Image (tube, rainbow, N blue to C red):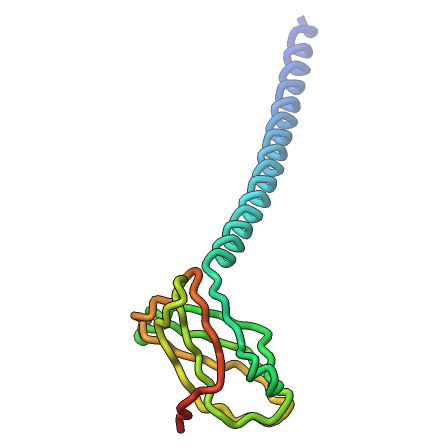
Length: 159
């Protein structure tokens, strides 16, 4: 009769230990699966984001006259400021390898190469200067995918 309680106790101990092991392995498997899904989802989101940026990216170019004057552009961004300003903002990072004192003009074109907006600013920089410059366009310019923005020296300087 003492054998039956000992067998029951042994079986109960075995079942309890087995359940903890199964629970632990299940949790471990779920965590690894979640980690894999998380990494895949992040890679997917980054890929979609890069694809959207590439599709909506505007072509921004400096005129030959500016490059001949020692100006280089290393970065540009086109964004819509829907806050209080309600306008498109074209931001350029320009490097001046020579002194420069003139008005720059950014001209925006739609996908059919029709002019849709202009923005002009006075720029005075020494050789070796660099910085960010913002051109603002009216919201009706509707700068978007396939638009082109050309930066050149303005025909009519601004003060």
